[in-house]
Length: 272
Ligand SMILES: [Zn+2]
Image (cartoon, rainbow, N blue to C red; front, side, top):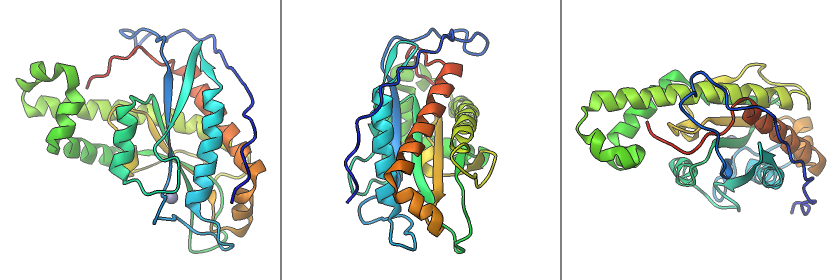
């Protein structure tokens, strides 16, 4: 069993950054809750990777997500309170697609999936951060288009108007939305890497890109963080320690705050 959580430090952060002009010129700053979806990997019958000392990925990533939730819930962005939403808050299995859908259902502003890496040799070490790849984006767009339910959900209130448009136009818009998502996700990934890199060695100094299913929300900047290699005995030991878990949560919190300082959350007008 893991130790009880200490009270989260109240760290209100109020960046004095106005909504940036340019490609977001049509949008206005928001005065609503900022929602960050946290996605602890694995769970239930899926333990994820298991370290040489028996540490299970599903347990440490849930702990880090819970610590990060405390910090998020105690933080404001430009006066707007933040709230964390966990795609799982216990030891149970949640399918990958459901994790994305849950984040979309709460209209999350960000999606951060939390994992621990493993490799066949114990020497592999360090954190890495992934965003969706372009090829993953195309397949995601195709998949969303193929799924009528997702499609109608996605176009939402403007569905009737859009129904008249041909599928090619819809696909193009969806593809553009995902391309923008990737751009934002890479930015988020870079600040997160910068913060995690202060804790120790990085596995890869740049944000990597892959077709991970949980990164495929077309309208939510989404990253997957491999916090460390649980297959590395030294890193497994760190991952088990509550002090390191808190350092990780602090680093992720700093990254999320820095991202929002550069990319102020906007009034809700989701459409693709
Ligand atoms: Zn994992």
